[in-house]
Image (cartoon, rainbow, N blue to C red; front, side):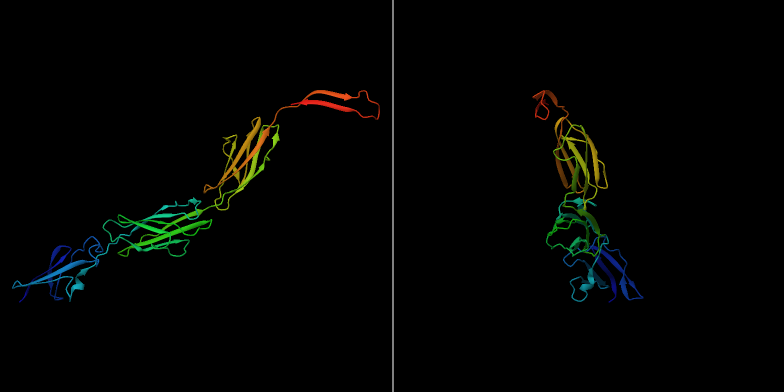
Length: 307
């Protein structure tokens, strides 16, 4: 008997194949499904069914379960869209005071994609040891189309700049564009040295200069604030670590608070007490006894002073 028709079913759609006399086979060019086969079944393929009918009307059907040609009827379709990695914390160029700062990031694949292959996750700090989904400190929670992850370093990082890189792929082997983030750990407050005035100074001049120097090795760019009796004295210029600010004292005891704040927000503070005394002493009385006095003899001078 002659073959009357050969057709193939792919993703629920039948396609009639045409006989190619040069190859002796029934063929047809068709378009693959638009969606990856990864989620179709446990084997991650589209089952294909082939049906051949002869002129007598006898039909032979084979599918992916056939013992002879079944493996040839497993159509694997891969999507080509790369997954994405988004680092949400710490921010780019951030200064942090936590030497075990959590690294928070999102892994996403497109809707209907093969999905994030969480086993392919690799996080590195400063190019060091690979950190994966099962590493200590790594927590990844499944969400729609991916994972939300947080990695908290089990060991403290040094005070310095650090760079995190993250890589991941989907189940169809598409690698995401590597995500990178640099930030600085700073757990040490800035150095603050107030050179003037001296603590406990008593002066009769209201005008006073508060001066000193500051430095921070990890977070350069220290900001100085000066408060006099709780009132901010305004901008304080800092040049090469040196600062000075003119203030005006109030009569009596004055409290001066000098604060140095580095880029990471670490603070060093110094408090001084300075007294302004503009009063003048008053000489109320003077006595010399005896007066007159004999040459070479002693005498007592008594002075009564107030103020």
